Length: 182
Image 1 (tube, one colour):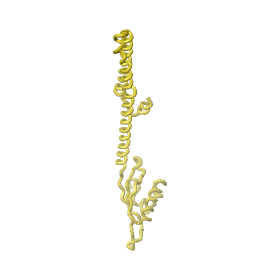
Image 2 (cartoon, one colour; image 1 turned 135 degrees about the horizontal axis):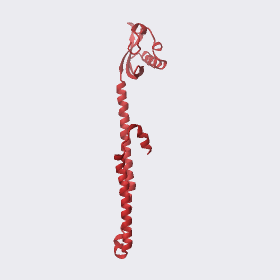
Image 3 (cartoon, rainbow, N blue to C red; image 1 turned 90 degrees about the vertical axis):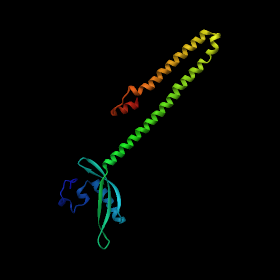
């Protein structure tokens, strides 16, 4: 009565098709038919449109029998699980965001390895000849050292950009797509 905004007299004796939108009535009827054909209780997840939007319910439907055992109707018990479904959906979304955060961490780790660590390693290789050049050609050694210092400063700047990006940027929900593109 509350859901349909009708009194009992307006509901009793009506079919699902007379009380509900066609899609909803067809789902209810199909599930009723399954119980009728199986002759045993069955459980379904059904949805129905309420004033505040769609609701999901677990519906336990069972055959009603005459004294001779013949099925004369279908009974049902409905439990609204809309809040649970919303919570499950929020959990799935949260898990997805967590997976994405781990993937971002892995990408950052790979970027640090590929760019920063390899850059430092290359600078180290370039500076190794300075040990021999200090005595033989001090100017060349000084030039290589200055180049190495400049390269290390560039790597430090790059590393700061990696580290500071997260602290400089607070992303609000509506900015997520834009931030991901960036």
